[in-house]
Length: 174
Image 1 (spheres, rainbow, N blue to C red):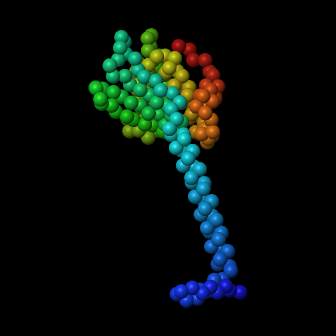
Image 2 (image 1 turned 180 degrees about the horizontal axis):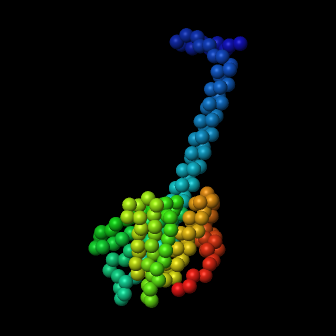
């Protein structure tokens, strides 16, 4: 059985089997588009939320403080060397292989080891001890969430930070 449609250019014959296949293809494409839109919305939401931001503090003061911004999907390190100049380096959470806190009498140093970066590690000096330990805990928690493929976009920033703190409750001796 076929369906004939007459239009200005002539008649077109459609087979019902082909028509149903085309409808299924259109539904599949629409479903994929909706899934892509949801995925992009989640990525945008996750990429714009800063969970933690800390700056370095040299003694007695720091004219050019370095800054670490921990977001849900990446860590951004901003290194300042002079007025109006900075070097911005980002490391995806999934690419962090390890993170260390080196503690000294007055300040701490955060060392981020990356799987993909050529120099392999980023060192941020002159951080407050408690801020460095807190940053390490947040990053370690995000690494665990990333490895377990847990979607964090449904949490508010406060809820997510609280969950990350809960996840890393091991006492660190300083």
